[in-house]
Structures are given as structure tokens and as C-alpha cells.
Length: 413
Image 1 (cartoon, rainbow, N blue to C red):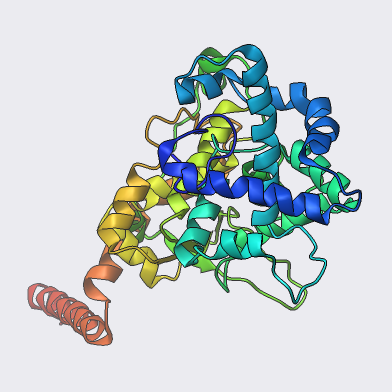
Image 2 (cartoon, rainbow, N blue to C red):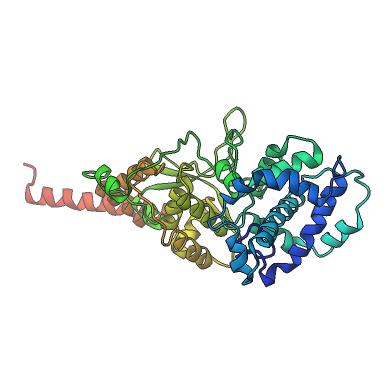
């Protein structure tokens, strides 16, 4: 459910979202004022919405019927179609204003409408708007927004504006992993753009066809591997290290670039705030409902939902610099991620899991009894220099006792 603004038909007309609904016509007025052709709203409807109406309808499961159910009214088809067209136009205009995509005629002057529209904005509202713009059921087809932008400004750089907006949203923290800016696929909506920027390095989309039976055939005879908790990895001697950004000719990593190397899982730092899990859940929902986009966000979330599902796991990852969170306590973070993949359908042993090899390598080291014993010995007796010296002294005393017993039983002639 959106917090402040509804985009698309699914939440249109909701009583709690009416404040922003009153701002949308003002955004459209701004676009009409900035238009180089001095176009009116009806002109934009004719040139933007009418040619793209059928294409836009394909983005919504029930199309304009969602408007009727949302308002519980009995409008005829003509009135309903007009409301759908006007909704698309107003939502596209609001999105352009929210992304600061429109050039100002005079940067030193702010119109009365803009002052009235932004007077109630605060930090909370800005965060809430970004939250709503990345909801899967709260999207506007970018093809409509792009067309409106082109006609209003006579410019063709809208795709770069969308990419930069989502880029800044993902890079909220100074040491955040770098998203993939070499995306060449056209995004369908803002959440899709976010999904493409998070693509792991070298990832290729793998689509599994055939459902559960084909997945079972593919996994037949293959030993199943599973992720374990961070504390379990730590006790078993599987390293957990933070993968930092490195300059000087070395390419930056991305958020989902989890690797297993040298007996340790190398994990990019994850910043968790109030909107992190919401964004991840919506990305998972998009992958579950779409074909051909891949399942790399789902694989990443399954990994983290297993890695830190208790408070002690969160504490350990925080100490190692892998996790930085702004929530109330470690228990809250653990609870959020433990339920992150609830009711999600995902074949962890299938080819769609880009972390399958890392999981197998980490699990093999985790299952090694020799390494488990050595790690236990290290944690038990070599945690600090004094314990290490005591352990060495105990070993020396034991050896001397054995030697003394041997010479007592077998004295030298």
C-alpha cells in the first residue's frame, strides 16, 4: 500500500492518498506552462495518451476495471475510459516533477503553484514518495512518461534522467556498492530500472521452463546445498569478509556480487533502513510475476534471509563491516530478513540461482569435520595470547609427562 501517492489504477481513489491527487493537476499545469508548443491538457491527451493507451493497458492486470473497483462506482465505459486516460496523464506528470526532470524557465523564480505544491513537503514526505515510486503495484509505464517529456520539452534524454534518478536512490550511502550503469535494455517502469541497475557482474538471464517437474529432473542426483547462519559459518571456520570499493584501476563491485574465495564469503556492504526490505520485496514480486528478467534479487534475498535470521547473526555481520543498519535493534533487522522470502517460490539448486556455486563451496567447507575441529580449537583455546600460551604450556606438560612415564617403564641401561 502506498504511503502518500498512488500511481496507476490499483490504488486510485483511495481516501488516504487524496492529498497528492490534488497536486497532480498542478504538475500537469506546470508542464502545460513549460511546453514549447503552448499545449493544453486535451492536446497532451490526444498526442500522448491516445496513441499509447492500448500499450499502457498491457501493464495492468485488470486494466481500467481496477478504477471501477477502487471507487465502487458504476461509471459507464466512456466515462471510465476518460478517467483512465486522465489518470495516466496526471501520473506521468507527477512522476516527471518528482524526478526533477522538467527544466525551469527561470531558476530564480518559483511559481505560486509550485510553492503551494511543495510547501507541505518535508524529509519524511520525500522518503515516502521514493518508497511509493518503487512499489510493484504502483507503477506508470515509462513509455508514457517518456512521450510526455519529449512533447513538452522537445528533448530525448529521458532514459538518462530515469537512470540517474534510480542511481541516486540506490547510492544513498557514501560506501554503497556501485550499481551497473552499462544497462542497455529499456526499462518498463521505475522498479524495472532499479532491478536492472542491481544486476550482478557477468550475470546472464536464465529462464527455467517446465515448472517443478523439470526442476526435479535437473536436480536429480545432485547433492543439495543450503545457506547457513552467519554464526554457524563463523564457528565452522567459513570466513565472512566485507568486499569494499577499491579505486586505482580495479573495477567497482556491485551490491549483489557475492563470491566465495579463499575459504571465505566475500559480501558487499549492505545498508539497511526502513525502506530496504520493502524495496527488496517488491523486486522479488516483480521477478515472481515476470519472465525473462531473471531471479538474481530473489537469490540474493534467500541468501541474506538465511545468513542473518537471528540477532547474533546481525551483530556478527555488523562487527565484520558487512552490514550497516539504521533500525531500532538487531532483533528488528533479523525479524525483517527472516520473513523476507516468506511464500516465495525459488529453486535454489536450479540454474537461475547465480549464487549456486558459492553456496556449494561454502557448504562444503562448512561440512568439513577437520576444519570444524581446528576452528573449534582456535575459538576455544586461542582466542587471546594468554589462552594460547596456556594451551601451549598444557601441551608441553602433557608431552613431558608422557616422556617421563615412558622412561619410568623403560629405563635406560
